[in-house]
Image (tube, rainbow, N blue to C red; front, side, top):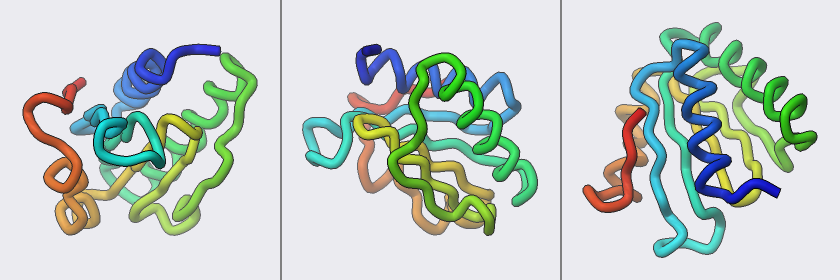
Amino acid sequence: MIESKDFAREICNLLKDYKAEDVVCICVKEKTSIADYFVVADGRSMTHTRALIGHLEEDIEKNHGVSPTRKEGVREGRWAVLDYGDVIVHIFNDESRLFYHLEQLWGDESNVEKF
């Protein structure tokens, strides 16, 4: 099994390949027990957000043989969440990301990596 840090970075790189914007990886393992990493990214529109999720799910299934244990918000495309256990992926449209601002809630200079 791939380490959670490497898995989170792979997800970030895949999202960048799919033209996601403002991709960051936040190490939250010292702050919560729900995950080790949050990956946060923007889609340019609701359609783009849904496409990012679809491509990401397909690649992760193909390359690692795993599916998210839970996913929410994919149909709406405003804030989609894929739960891969140690790595939780959040893909927002611009408005929703500004409203929830997960980086401000969970991140600081020492635990945020930008891609």
